[in-house]
Image (cartoon, rainbow, N blue to C red):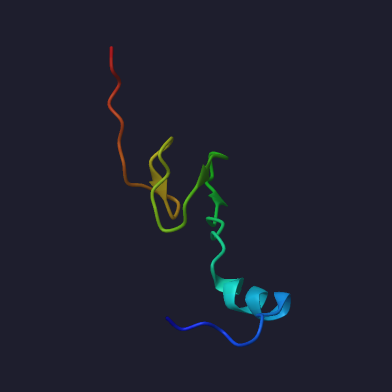
Length: 60
C-alpha cells in the first residue's frame, strides 16, 4: 500500500479541497417579488421574462 513520505500541509490540503464546497444556488426575484431560479418560470405567478407562460386555473 502506498504511504506518503511527508505530511500534507494545511495549505496544500486546503488548495486541494477548494473546489469541494457546496455551491450556493443563484436566486433572482420575479416581478411579483418571489425568489426563483434563473431561466425558469416563476412558480407563483407563472411569468418568464415579462411574459405569462404558465396559466393557473381557479379551483372552486
